[in-house]
Image (cartoon, rainbow, N blue to C red):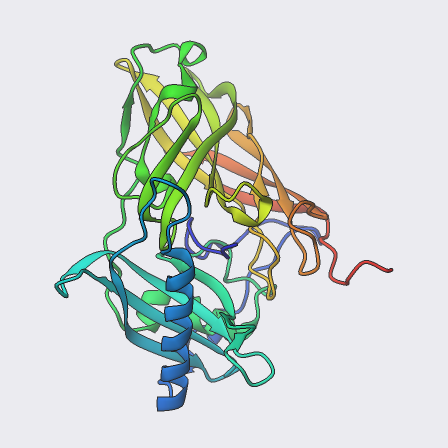
Length: 347
């Protein structure tokens, strides 16, 4: 399982009412420091642990990655020194830089940066992090990720592939006639740097992808249609990314692609991601359903996990209202319908 990453960076969620997720005080964003030699060595060992796990061959025909991780910057929260972040480059066999530079956040638990031989991974590997700058996220994590994890690490953010300018040839302008199961998705939806050609709604992407996985499976899970603005018909297409393990533990990310059609191609207006604040510990990435489209907005159902929820079954429910204005979709409000459980189930 992988933790929060992929998505829109640090969105402040607006709106009124007790059910709305509050934004955090931005004054917490600068209290970080350089690591001690022991802390840096521990973080480097954690990075190696994550890399070894994700880069291995996960299925026949999916080779293990040959790159190596190289930690270039580490910061530790001064507010809560059990949290540390690292900027990690990937180097090829000859020492050359390869795509896949990411940020990872770790936690020290009971004096150890690893438990049962595995890194205490809180967030990442990722280039950006969704909904981590609210009061629900531990202040030590906010120190490291807000307002910008790359600025905190004093490392230039690498160029990331964008879905915004991507056109998908489909041979029709009628969204209802699109053969969704056989379209070519932009690689960025699952963290890849090349298009993902679906076949019957499914494709395996060779890595590094969605972090440092050697392979990632991209799948479609449904679509909806509606008129978002006068004369602007769109579809909301649900995409999931997993590590091919076949269980909920292997689910890595979920998003909705909002697309229009013209010139026999799909044009991506936005990629909508879940707005659950990062909690520690997290049992699973949040899941989003297919958006309900109406004039001027899209309402997206979200399924939030508490720290003790099994990966099969989230206990939290929310919905995010995305409004369309000036040619863009932005979050208007996230409303929590049912809080995720914060205590283990009674025996």
